Length: 123
Image (cartoon, rainbow, N blue to C red; front, side, top):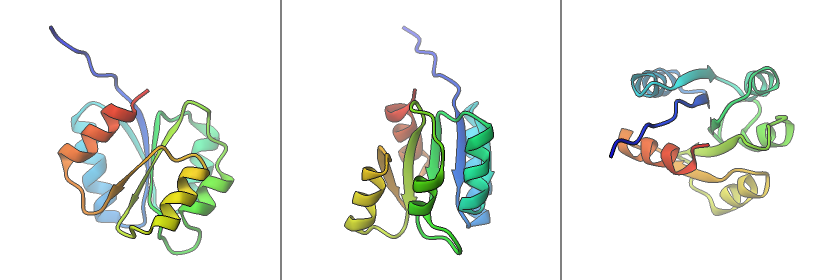
């Protein structure tokens, strides 16, 4: 029995350019459409103009953070947000979930962990 995995439109929001590049490349290798933003303001603008299946949102960034993104992004009800952070703080995770995030990945994460989370939270 063959299972066709759905191609997802994914936005990655992170200020770490090497992580953006590596994660973007890996997800494209798995046939996903990937967009990136290196700050929360650009990510808010991107979700206003494009419908995403998944937003992978960093918490701690210069300028506006992941909480600011969640409060200001006009996300479609079907868009899932995964918090992706090295700053594993219960209060931050709680706030992100209260604002609509559905899961989180603690950095550093590997390809298998990312793909497993995308499959689990996929639309």
